[in-house]
Every structure is written in C-alpha cells, then in structure tokens.
Length: 156
Image (cartoon, rainbow, N blue to C red; front, side, top):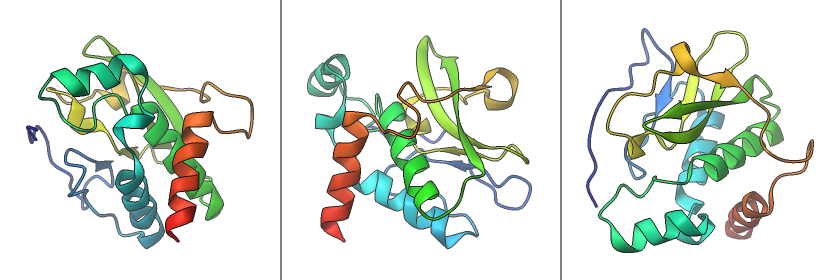
C-alpha cells in the first residue's frame, strides 16, 4: 500500500488536521479531538466500504483511506458530539472526480479530514467545499457508521 505525502499539517498557521497516513495522523492541541481521530482511524475497516470501493481495495494497490470518507467523517462527527464538541459540521466536495466528505469548524473554518490520503492532489476545501448534512435522518447515524461506533464501544 503506497502512502504519498502531498501536503503537510502545520499547527501554527493552520489548525487543520489533514490525515494522509492512517497510522500517523497529525495531532492538534485538543486531546479530545486527537482521541476521536485516533479512534476513528483505528476502527474503520474494508468491510465498512460500499461494494465498489471494496472491490478496488481487493484489486488495486491504493491508500487504505480510499472510499472511507463518508463513514469516517460521520463516525468522527458523532464521537465529537458525544464529547460536546459541536463546532464542526460535515462538508462535501467533488475532488478528483469523486464525492468527498470532511468536517469544517463552523466559526474559524478549520478542517478535519481523516481520509485526505486517498487523493493525489490537495483538496481545495476553502474554495469548493460546501456545508452539507450527512445523507441520513437527523440525529440518526447510518447503519455503517453505527457498526463502527459499536466496534469502538466494544473496545472500551
């Protein structure tokens, strides 16, 4: 599996958390956010993917994060809300001809993208990203996300 560094996290000018490598996420100054990012990344699995992405993982040498953006973003959002961090909202963008999800801070625009490593080029979050509710019923996570959240709870 190839891991490519295409841009870097900096905590001085930008507080964005852009994960390129599942096993080495950048850290923020907020331990609650760091723990939620880590839990999310440690608990997503190929079985959580839609079938087309599962097939890609079986037949291609691709970054593990490929295809995980929706569920990983929703899991992270739910974990943050459980800790009363309600300042982040799901955002959506079309990038490299695919749909992509990430979190963006409501006030300061900071980005948390736990699956950015799937792309060859930097995601233009601030130019093209749009706030968007997750594709679900209000306050009810999707089945795939519930599965990951249950996996996290079983490990605690």
